[in-house]
Image (cartoon, rainbow, N blue to C red; front, top):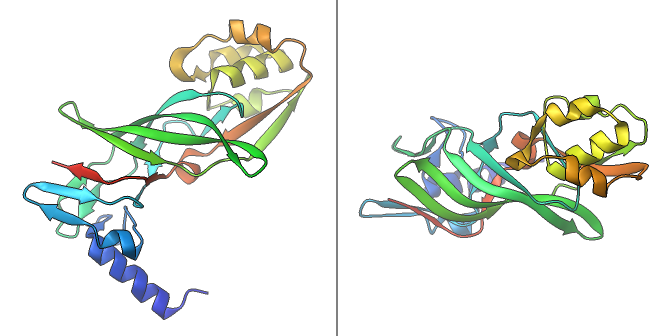
Length: 218
């Protein structure tokens, strides 16, 4: 249960950070400790480590294998503004990084690691942030129809090769393959397998970026 004291603490943290979504919900949320470090120096604004930037992607889902690394560019979901309404990071700004293998305890998973924020052609910032670790998997078996899993998805090259090789569904090769990699070579590596586990990512719910260090915007 959310208590009134918790709500007051959360509201205080948001006001201290000074960044809101439109006029209501905060877009970048920091804990009280990090919110105290939010500051404006001259024409620079600092977004503190611990803040979260929500993202969007053009596809509803992304499918990768637990062991692959795949380049990925996300977009900032909505304008990030100060309490005074100044837009710090406009909606549609790009966050560049990659999906890479990660572990949660004994479970294999994947995690998005962000390395660059592109606000415009002249405004590029190195950033250090990542998503949570996604461990949700689906097993695809020999002879199964992988079309429904791949339909409307962006596929890591290894996932595309695995789905095409195991299911025999050549149409999978026409789906978007991250990084533009062909799947022919990888399909040979995966030849003979009877099943494969893939990770299914829902970008808007799974890939919110938590900053590991401050961003200073100028």
